[in-house]
Image (cartoon, rainbow, N blue to C red):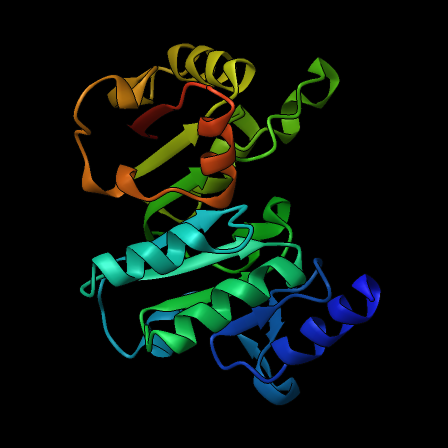
Length: 228
């Protein structure tokens, strides 16, 4: 039943006009509704039909942050990025149900994300509870590692913000080491226990499925925002 359900979701994605899918990571082309092939690099505002700032949620999973942020900020556009279509399916349908025309989804590998965004096209990046890749041998797969920062610089505006929200002590420590090691990075805010006091940013009130379960387990939630 699980496999059939996934296949049905993959099929449904092809009919959603707020979802773009990459089936060849070597090419900048994407497949959209009804199999149409498009190249969106530098053209994302044509999808949203406005010139509002664009915010990415990387490793978005079910897209909970993208949908909630889109509901919170009508004057910004949001794109949730994840490689797993069955997860994106939920967020894409929620955005449609809420009539959030400022929320879209991109199914692609984040390692290839620079194929799909032009220089200075993105204003902000959210990374919410990503896989921390605990083994040191996989450090280069952590989304706040130097190699990913180099990717983000290709399309993030000069003062564009990167934000990480995590419960992982290992990822938190690694991220802090990375930002301290790079003189180009300016930390704007960091808090190693955001719920120990009133929240400083309304966006932090959004809780994903994973965050809720982490809080139930008594884990401490950490947050950092910085420019590259």
